[in-house]
Image 1: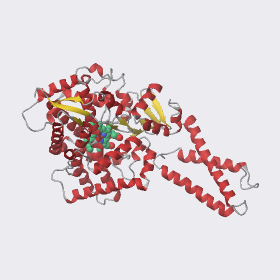
Image 2: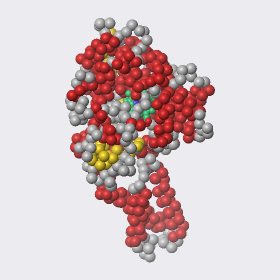
Image 3: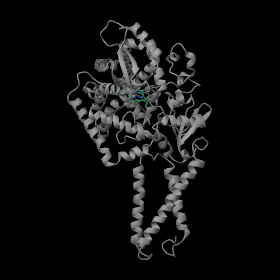
Length: 553
Ligand code: HEM
């Protein structure tokens, strides 16, 4: 196309625009992280286009055939610039990127759309990644700068306390608020983590026991009321864990188990967690959604609600301290709290519920599914429970820690149903990382797919089978236990591990001592694992069971 009439119809203008595009890619977009600001990038280019169009029309339209000719030419130049940018991106990512030697699908080398599509296709991200590992081996490039590493040594290399890997860009999703989970600055994270560790220590958990026991008893009474009839335990475990975490975060009894319905705020939280599950691997898309004013308003309502709960706890200190009391104490000691501090406190209050509810509910649901599916295992567990029974009317906690078979059942279920099955996102240190004999370059995003690792026959022979004995009398079925990290390890491991285990042990113990269980419909044996969905963390489908009083009791 002739540019600005015959005088300027110089190919060099196109060449320059193309080169500028290449330069913008090489000097700007090739470096740093851009996934978190798709809206701003689009707005920047739109502004450049608009300003150059208006300026060119103003300066050149009289001499070069009118406004529409100038606009057409500016548009052509702008498209050429974009072409240069994308061509450079394509050539760099396929031929020159530091991950170029790692195998993987061709489209994954070029764009993160590949991972997004994998996550959304069947909502079985972990399974899609697993298929890729079966095809390409332990190291798979699943995005332009993104590696999935299923080698057993990767768990320690990436997640041990000596690892220098940091959290990846996925954790920017909540910005500008920063919770402990989304805190990427290692110093800031370490400072905040101390308070969380105190609030979730054995000693602190003792002070929460009475509230947890109340919820456990209410759950058991719901089961009792359903005897002989169908009850969806996936729903009841969700109500249970939200009731528990509601008191630990907001010092209120939301009575969701009693009403059998999620409180609207928790319903919103639960559903927005589901959207993170679905869009978790399309972080740019989530960020984009968050910036659309209409869509962001429910989140604003949640924040306002959380802020009111904070105010309530400041003005009316709860009689029994909860997890949030520890975070609040830290906040109150700040000499000059800023709006950012307040926003972070809100994010942490919600995190107590978000991190502690669906995770524990899914763990309980999957475990009860496995126990129902394997009556022999359930009977053996009941034998252990019977041998443990005491006359005490109090619900048991500490003494359950020593129940070897109960713990083995929990471990085996968590191995088969890891809570973040596709793995969490980490960023390799600038000097790179060695996994086995393979060197992984610095500044790349790395994920260890927990589902694939936990089903790896190299570490867990007969990995596809639910065999709790592998954690007790059959050590030959665990050849590498360093791979088994259901709560992760290192500085970013789960601080709520002991609290979660207390809930799981207590609930399963109370169920096993009282009831026999069966599936409401036999097809659940097959459909339950099929219907589990994953994008980031595990979401269980309905688990419809029928309970009956144990014949021996
Ligand atoms: C069985 C239930 C649970 C499982 C399997 C589990 C697992 C995990 C995992 C894998 C992570 C790492 C996530 C990441 O790095 O992206 C994590 C982090 C976390 N979990 Fe849990 N969790 C459970 C229950 C709980 C509970 C009850 C709490 C209590 C509030 C809790 C609080 C947290 C927090 C605050 C983090 C962020 C830690 C940090 O970044 O330093 N979790 N959990």
